[in-house]
Length: 265
Image 1 (cartoon, helix red, strand yellow):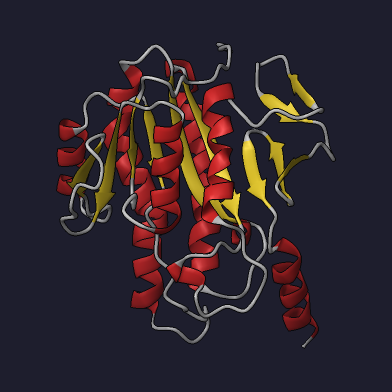
Image 2 (image 1 turned 30 degrees about the vertical axis):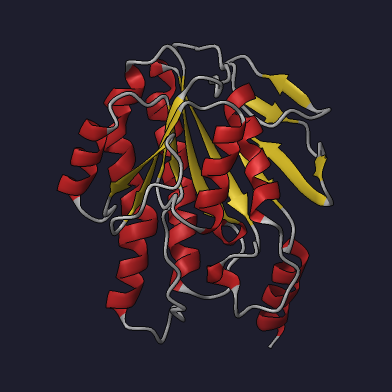
């Protein structure tokens, strides 16, 4: 088996692309990358957006459309960092919602992530070091019984497969599992919520190859694994790294409690 040395991807001086980078957590990620010295950020959205900073290049991208993803890769041919953040949550109870509505979530959250990755993989391969970050959810591995959960669990599996496929081209692939954040998506949810700008500090995973903590070590295939229980505190929020899976746990306890209650009911 060919092994590669996992390294971080420099943010200072880099060019990045963030899908869904015009608002919410995507906007916070764009701002964090700029704060860390990125020289240009391609921020995508489904409709044209005004340019709020000379370093931000708005791009119209529909992640559900193959031609749109291809066009975005041609326009942003200089990137070394890709963040797949675009996603939707339609409130689809898995046994009651129309299948077409669940399919919409899969088309964006799963196939959209794969589609963008396919389009940009050759671009990332031209860089000496590159990074791909897929923004997922704690609901990747804890279900609330909705199609959104299904789509994020599938996207997690896809991320692991993508990591294997891109390893030999020296692209570090990281999954960021987030809990409740104070964005438009969670506006109607009454629960503890993280500040998106705090969670955007997970850009550490890009710069270092993974969030560093007291349990960091490399195995024989240079796959980063944090020792179980290794944790890092970020302003009251905990992040844990396992196989380069970055999990933010603010709101996790609330989600877990609700999930258990539903199972008991």
